Image: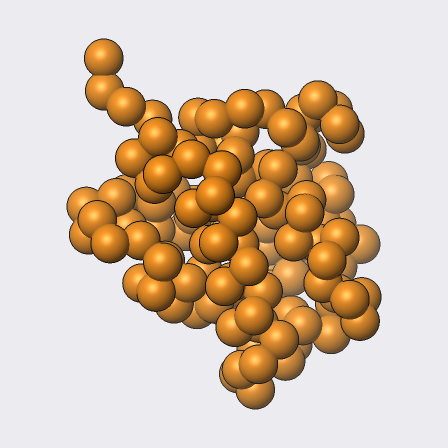
Length: 127
């Protein structure tokens, strides 16, 4: 049986490092201002939730489901206007974080392809 993305990335410690880098980039890059302003001043809660979600999404412990129930990602994101620009900003930060934190190029490519689908699904406005 093939190892999960969670196992291939290196488990909880590596997922947490990826998420931390993602939010660090979102907080620092002027090009991500649009999505940064959708978040509270402190990114700690967002970071914790994304870590828990990605842990389960990558095939590890279902931490998000255990604490919050089914992710219902699109429904949870409906209060935020997400169009192509917001999707692209999110993906830019995530691709950069993957590049910085994941050494395995094949794993990076697999995660990127899947995350593009998730990000596309989060769009709730046409622009």
